[in-house]
Length: 200
Image (tube, rainbow, N blue to C red):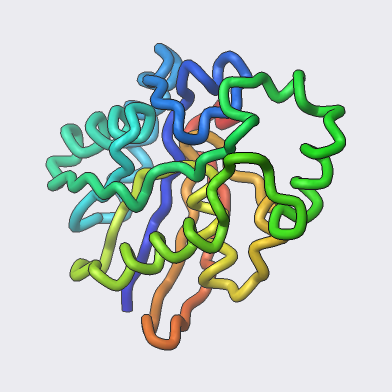
């Protein structure tokens, strides 16, 4: 049995500006650094063995703050990087809200993929590859909203076209319980549990 706790990174400079980030590598905001420190108090209760993190700055900075304070080993893994959002990256949410291609993508990203965006099945494959190499049993994974949603769909057996039906706030925690890897058998224990007062 593996207990995976997926933490979306704290507020980044991109979140503060309301940007789509994806593969953009933006650091934490000052508020985000405070959020990561605040999250440590609740994370102490879970007695993790290890922290894995995306190497992107916003996740790595969040994970480093937590690992330093909890005295846990920290491992970077490229497969935990955020999904690339193609033509949306660097644009404000408010800019694209009325775009027809954006609305269609939200409704069904498999049927209506965005130009230059990562294929969701590729994101799912890399997450599954990551899972298969885990040896620990109580694991904190610091990653991104897109990857948390991919993980939720994968473990719950929900088609990826429903990926944007989940809310995943900054510094929110999602727990997945994995019983078997082949075939993948597990449960979603909770989703989007806020560890800080202002989780966006």
